[in-house]
Image (cartoon, rainbow, N blue to C red):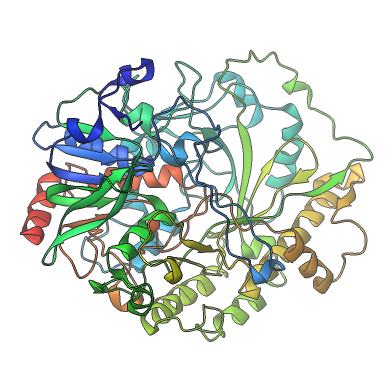
Length: 600
């Protein structure tokens, strides 16, 4: 049975048949009820002037990761990781991945968003740089400040990086828990003394370094704060509908304008119907399914569409390319001969407030990771043929855009303000190093052998470590952690390496170990409908409108031209707030006028 939910009473059993209950036409039809989709739906409907429908393939479920809340997708074999395959973890539930993620809540560095501006078309002034994005972070997220007891651990925060949204209901919370492990403190003190590592003034300041970070937790209930709780539950607006357990088959066009979507109830493809959009269709299905829907609708690489038997609406080669995710090594671990002592001033009584632990993270650039090799790695990357490590037959526009990214990343490899390593201090001498800005690029493409069958998941090819520079960086990260644990402030505790362990001393041996142990995803897929100029392989402009058609936009992680040095959910909230804002240059009225004009 397919459930169409109109209020929070859905949780106790009130369901209305979707096809009979929904309208035939809405002002805005949003595909995807996840992190971005529900945020945009809330903001576009709050004035009461516009009708909004959000369509979600998953069900409206209680919070938590249980069977049925994730898509069942397996990646293509990854040649750079010894031809292994991996699960592709994507939320399949109202709230999307924000309903099932690890709740680590972070922003990228200021440089991440300045690069977005650099890779944009420049049509919206400075709104895609750090300064422009900060206002939307402030609007999107409400901070729960740290407790006074945590000051002894060196936790710092600065209210200037946060907004003043004091709502206890319809918002998304970033919360500091009251519990910090005292075992973290020796790492904090040791890291502060490493040349080039600074203590960030605030986890949301856009500055790399040492930082305690928040979780997406409601401070009033201790429960997950996610897009459903912040942007759907309890709103009960007559002009804001949510259609669940429904598959979007493709976008419907009137000539060159997106006029609606073809849908059918989950598992009942013979019951197709069309829901029309007066103003705009907004794709918010995420970096895996947004390119799939575009391709099935005839927007994408023309040669792929022809092989799949799909009529080409727009030859847009970048759809499904530029795929990125963070990669990580599950463990680089040591054991202490003598455990570092806990300072006396941390022998304090901390009451567990039910909001979880506050964790300490490290975000650092390549010159800090590898003072002796960063310039060599940057020069090697800079000298590459930009097509050399992209998929065979990659379109010239995509190569051109990647070359621009290559120039930027080679420059930033020589700078301390652009992170290449993120790691969390657990209190034990064990780390999970994350290559936070990989240079390899993958693809998410429909299988031409299955044609236009939307029930077949796209081929997800991470292509992790296809560019050997990522392996070089990972090797340097392992070597940095070795130096950190066995030298400097921690040298007196005689750490013994357990993993990788003896036998992995040379760069060649470490590179082999990295390829054998790397995981290609931290569940942060981005980039497959990139916000870049069309001549650089972009799919959307700075206004997030899809090139070559009218009345169609993308608002989700797929628009990120380059991945951020953080978990991605907070940035997706900011993107969603940005395109539905009613302030300053990007006013809602301005967007509506522009988009309505483009759609007429």
